[in-house]
Structure formats: C-alpha cells, structure tokens
Length: 112
Image (cartoon, rainbow, N blue to C red; front, top):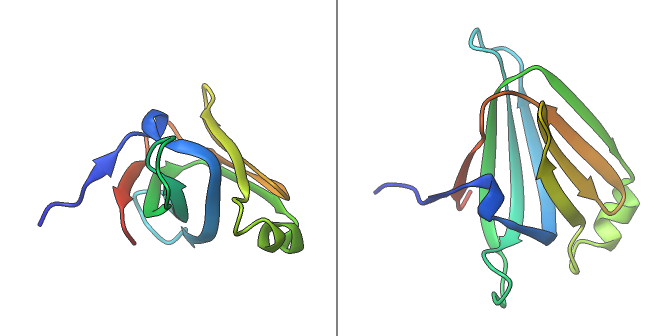
C-alpha cells in the first residue's frame, strides 16, 4: 500500500504539535532528520493527523527549545508556523525554534 504524501507548502502548520525528532548522522549519503508532528490537514479539520517529515542531506541543524513550554502548549498546538527560506526550513515553536538546512525538499507522509 502506497503512503500518502503531501508537500510542505500545503500543510496547515499553525497549531500543529511537535512530538519528536530523530537524527541520523551515520549515513554515507548525508545526515537525515525525521520530525514527528500532528497537523490539521486543512483549516476546517477538527482533528490533527500524524505526519512524518524526512529531511535528507542535511547540512545544518539548529534547535533551541524550552521543553516545559512545549509541553504546556501540546494540547493547543506548540508550532506557531513553518516556512521555507532559500537555504532551508524553519519551524517557529511556542518555546523555541527548529532550523534545518538542506537543498532537498522533505518527504512528508501521513502516519508514523
């Protein structure tokens, strides 16, 4: 069964929930980062859907967060917004920031 994918610019990022991150630096093909999130598929959605973002050939990762604030905002959504820059992807969290620098668009699939 083929996984359903969506593109970064089609995701409704506001009030999404950051659940976790995996970092793999042991690959010969470059570092890989996986983000696990819950998002609303659109502005009319009543419930969040689990998604997995996989970033490949990551050149830089910057993470700064207050874990207490992330947990405090988990139910209402601890992601304010996410956007693409000319070098990477930025996630503004309530309680921090995640910046991933890569020239490759992430693979985003529904489910874990």
